[in-house]
Amino acid sequence: MFVRIVKLTFQPTKVDVFLDIFENSKHKIRNFNGCRLLELYRDKTNKNIFFTYSYWENEEDLETYRTSKLFKSVWAKTKILFADKPEAWSVDKLESSCNQKNY
Image (cartoon, rainbow, N blue to C red):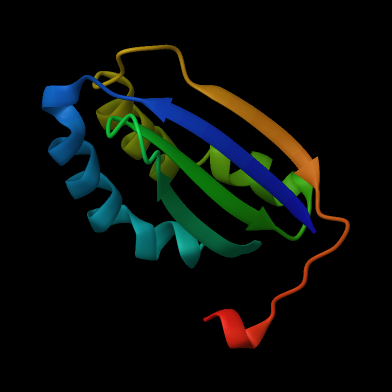
């Protein structure tokens, strides 16, 4: 499993705009070929910092998404809201475990 983690820092006044963009595009991204999971996290301290975690079958699927009309459309609307340069990490998922009693 291939995982992409992206840190996004928004202008504080643009957070709601980003959340609307995410809400309107998340289903399309999740249904993109090769995407197995898309999650959004918000920093506990800095409410204008978000992280996306997306799980992909392989790197090629992510690259296909990144060159798609869908990505270009979402990214064009999102990048103008940034307060800082986004950071991204591509990692291989080695292990995962969940203790059901904690949920």
